[in-house]
Image (cartoon, rainbow, N blue to C red):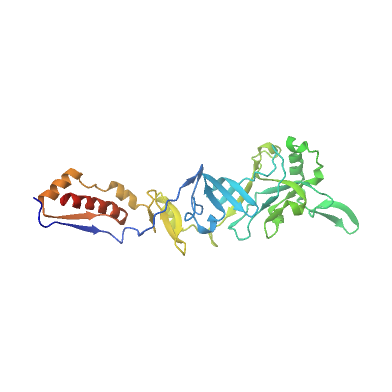
Length: 321
């Protein structure tokens, strides 16, 4: 015979001091392909720093850098020195030469060229390219307006089989350093009237062997004006979380492995995993049948409210069955 009166009273003791406030769930990945992701980069919208989301994205496990001149695969990130390395598929190297439209940075992007970059313009028109100018008003001979110390770089590049097959005169080569790109950080090969370009950021200790140079583009990035690493983000990453943002004001969140987001860190998940579990269903059913009113005193956190509520509903149905 079922009791005439039944009640299940639940007290949730939630510590608002030691536990973080939970916000809407959103999972941020900590890797994209083989590249580890840390602040300021993220795996998608709501992850990383919102200022960087527009330029660096992860799609189908491919990390890509985007500017108005195209999309470029990210090959590596040096988080210690704040440098991101990208490649341009249309760039000419010692192994392959091909036409290219050039490369440029968006003026408002939080990136700038690294000092180690060396850009070499290839197959430029001596007669019409603006990189050449007359030496003076009395001498109309064309003199390259390029880095004179880069002459040896042109010689090495033009000795590569892929480029030497084009039989280009060495005078059509110009070493173009980032400082020459101007305030717009633009290298428009159509305006410069050059058919291609090559870029590298390291000789790999082999200055005379262009086959082993590290081809690509190195870009510096900054977190903010003072380039300070946010302490809240550092604590988040130490707790195995990923930094992100949420809401109309891009408020900081810490995305935890479980999919729960907090405004601090993910250390609370360890207490979840180590917390004692509820008694088995059979034992609880016996307790429910032996008492007319049961008091559940569960010390938990907001992250498990829904789960515990579903258990209590199940027990309540058993009680009244």
